[in-house]
Image 1 (cartoon, one colour):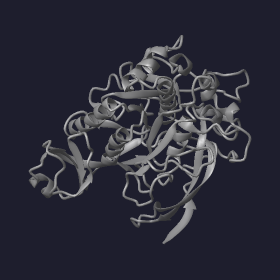
Image 2 (cartoon, rainbow, N blue to C red):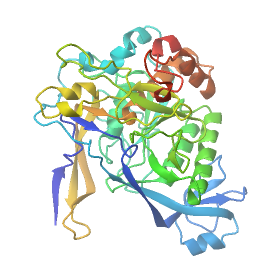
Image 3 (tube, helix red, strand yellow):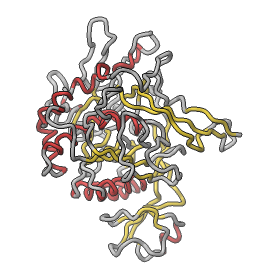
Length: 449
């Protein structure tokens, strides 16, 4: 029996903490029907069913039996593709009795502490991101949201669900990320850091739980192929063992990321929300943010924005309680939201400390597929545009991605490394805080320009 309902545990009516799979409890299940293969350099395996060719990289994603993969003369190594499934952390809870902001409301910039902390109006006196392109590798960007302008000609669906691109079939997480980067300057709703950038939806999540590692790799390579100046990946898996198959996954990821960087695409990636010291973890690795050429972003946020009796208990640049950290593992700290967990349910608007952006109220058909009494989404029906709050390194990364687009717009000849260098050189570690949470420092868009 199936029934229609909205995925209320991700519907933004107040706040949700966490990421799409960065910073959740993850189970990386090996698929038996798909494999990531290393080729001998002579092209894709003609004797296998190729799902993604990954041009420019000596790897491919194939849908075949392991026996067929092992017998292929064109394959020099392989590993099962990974299907990463999610278990929401305990902090992923929503505030009750908070009215959603409708699309006809007055401009919501006064609630965007993240843009105020970066002095985005001053940055827009220089550029709004004209002439740049940002790819959102995520759960889908809702192209019909009135505050978003999505390039549907270039947008792609990398899953096999047949729903196409420009839809939030994997939930509204990608729509929130996209708005933080590029919500248009149209006198309604919110404003993004780079509202004039060319926004491309690269959807790698569907309504079925999880995302394929191979689909994510394909989206990274595609972002480079379409000359994206920045690709935002508010996703990740941790902990992944450094040894065994983890080594193979690291190699293919590093190959794809190095290729994209050389093609001029800066990869901005969420650091994860496990409150983990990535610097000192010698047994496990966080992917893809610890991959080659990654701009790994930790989260910061205020406590008491718009509700503290005596002003802010913590400033916008203070580290979020959930963020991963590590001096050499983090590139930049940026606004991603924070929360006073003791304030939840007390009647104060604690969610103001999260990041406000574009969202979508997504509707699915749900079924008890396994007969265990647990319903899961099996079909995407549609969505309605909304605005709402989320927190996580998933929200911090797009603040950096938008800033990178502004730097590229102001310096069209910059390559990916030069954009990253400009952001790092402009950043400083805030007084009184530990460098381990910031890498080069807290994001400073105006100075980077």
